[in-house]
View 1 (cartoon, rainbow, N blue to C red):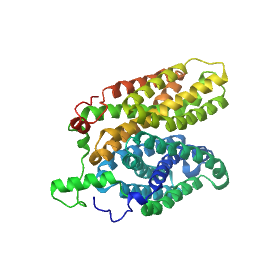
View 2: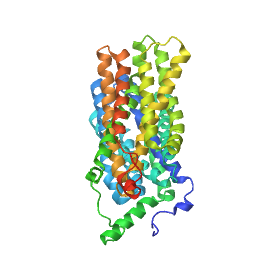
View 3: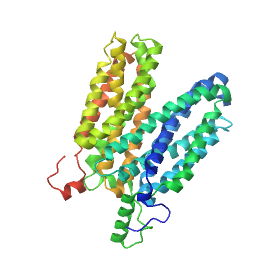
Amino acid sequence: MSAHPSAPARSSAGAWPVVLCWVAVALDGFDLVVLGAVIPTLLSTGALGFTESSVTLAATLGLVGVGLGAVAIGPLTDRFGRRRTLIACITWFSVTTLLIAVAPSPTVFTTLRFLAGLGLGACLPTALAYMSEHAREGRRGSAVTRMMTGYHVGAVLTALLALLLVDRFGWEAMFVVGGVAGLVVVPLMAWKLPESEAFLAAREARAAAGGVTATTAAPVRSSAVLKGGYLRISLGLWVASFMGLLLVYGLNTWLPTIMEAADYSISAGVGLLLALNVGAVIGLMVAGSVADARGTKPVVLAWFGIAAVFLAALSIRIESTILVYAAVTLAGVFVFSAQVLVYAFVGHLYPPEIRGTALGLAAGVGRVGAIVGPSLGGALVAAELAYPWGFYIFALAAVLAVVALAAVPAHGPAARAQDPARVG
């Protein structure tokens, strides 16, 4: 394999790829929390003329941008490489996030949130593709899940930062910090992030087969993940990703409200939200290693199944404070890491030449679930059905993920062709 002219060799990269991809995912965690952290100030001060409806529109279009960015980036990262794509996306997200701090109106604010979402949505599937290829053989699951702890750490740090900055410096400070943080990462990536060796090898193989140079490999079409035996795989993974992010965003948005409807105190509801995310970090530290040892498919099936059991169990009001915190923490352990194991499964099933496209589409479809989850929870709250039906519906979503993944083979068509003894 020839050297990549703009990136150092992997052997000299050390831990930098792991650290930089973790930071890229942490920026996603920042974006999850930052708008919610400043909404009370935007509304209470009447900043820029925001109303409840215009803030809701900004939040929704930001998520739409994230979903579109995830879907659109796959063919680009498969054509131009993980390294250049990730650097470009973080630069785009950082600049547009900085501009939000000087937005003169809700319309400009919302437009910039949408544009920032395009860049940020593209970061996650690119980082996932990079990490799944950078990991040593047999360690892909743990590499992906540990990278995704950055998402929750970024969210927690952003929430704590909001407590320190918003009252003192205004809502604008949060977007300045987020934009500057991203711009600090960009030169580090340009210096320390090598290109994925698997991507380079796949590109050179395509170039050799097509009689073109390695730097002019043909563009990848999104339809490639629906051909050659991948149709059933892609549909099953998309359903699972949709259901997984429906659970993640639905629970993060409405858990305190649902628990209040079950006659728990408001403070208990917020504490349980913290317990849910503590469980998420624990689950991410454990799930990948288990998947590497036992196989991704059986573990992701078990994780979603166990999540369904704990979610259904939360519909039973528990008098013991210790038990209810334990139940919510365990639900977090399995719900959040199950979703990330879907991404690890995607990285396992597709070859490098279409892996970025596959991850982008899975993440993009999942982002639709991220919009549906909070909307569904809100509808149940408005209808005064949030407890216990909210937990029943969330449990059903986990069951549907199990059904969808059960139809996905344990190995992709290429691996099965090389070893016919492998079966799904």
